[in-house]
Length: 530
Image 1 (cartoon, one colour):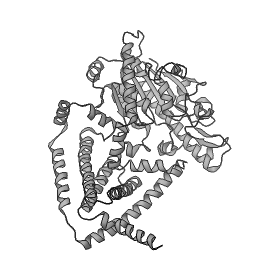
Image 2 (cartoon, one colour; image 1 turned 60 degrees about the vertical axis):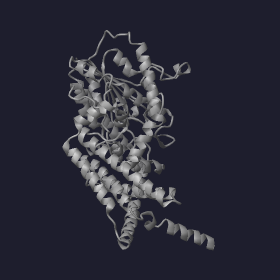
Image 3 (spheres, helix red, strand yellow; image 1 turned 180 degrees about the vertical axis):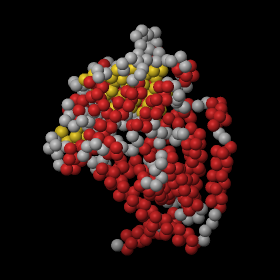
Image 4 (cartoon, helix red, strand yellow; image 1 turned 45 degrees about the horizontal axis):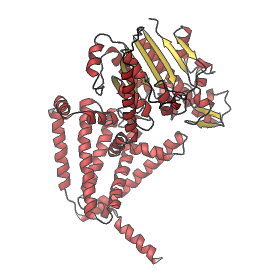
């Protein structure tokens, strides 16, 4: 028993805040925390949400994340104070460099650190990098960088007395515990709202909002297996494209728009007979003769990546017995063979384990725009309407992607001046869980009281009402896209990657599982009057 007490006393002394934040490490900790808080709140402020619960939760997450990170470094260097100090200051250097890069991206390019910006950096030659810096760097940014470096060096030279250090450590402990409480409660609430027991996902999303963690996650994803898969798929697609380059398309449509919806089951669309008016705009297009809805279509899978690896090329289950699905001509290169200028506009992630198939195809387009340029803050909350300005600007030629394909961008711009035909792929967030975050308050058209024909309890009816509101909002988004192209010779194809089972199968809410209801999707063709 005394041995246990001795070990406990040793660990308590060894892992006391005074030990963890001894010497100049306290300065490094304060700087790392300040940099992460400042960058994160800057991004939130640019989204107009600085005075919000989101900002409060981010601050709590940052305090927890940075503090735990320093404890982890301390544990790794348990037997070496010198190693701990080296790791702590290495972390500070990484944060300072990342802060400078992030500030440059935000104020010069209206971007943030992401797979796309990292890819552009990796693919850039030293000469291109110099020309790029010369074009975008200015005196204000240089002055800001110098001021940041001076502040860091000055802060590192500050020294505090032992008494003051003890007070600071007590304050750190109190703030950390309060932040941890906020963090856990919010993560648990998010898990509850999502009807999921996987609190781990909520915690990872929260950590991904902290700049230094986001840097680590994005970099790991980029250089990991997922991105290598995207590169391999892209190379395969390019080879298939070259083998078909002699083919042409004599009949042309000015604009072809391919809309990929998300998690939409057709049985909840009034266009397909649902008893509540969830799709009035699409029904109006059907009545005017501009829309045809197919009612016998099923998805090849219940997960986005599993579906798009077949939908975005000419592969299928049968052909995969003879060759990999990626060894087929893809839809983007099909459009390029027909001499269309190609665009990919998405409200979903660019890379990652759920975006291998879509990421490979997006890389092949002449221009791409991932409107969730700040996915760490907006992934759960971005509404699909943020895509509409990009669609309008790309259609008119007023916008060109800063990350356009390097081998095609100049030619694409020249051809655009000659009114080149355009092929758009639009990837919506649609009805992806959590449903209540997929539509604005103005589209809260349905409530539990409206659900009269489904034998559900109050909580289930409330969740279904949220889902129906996403269907109504999706109807609005698709109709707005139609309006953008209505005055031109345009064909629009809309489908959903897969569906959701809303308590229809064994009384459960199912996302990703295989059953009839997760596979019954809409397929809709729309045409302009031109």
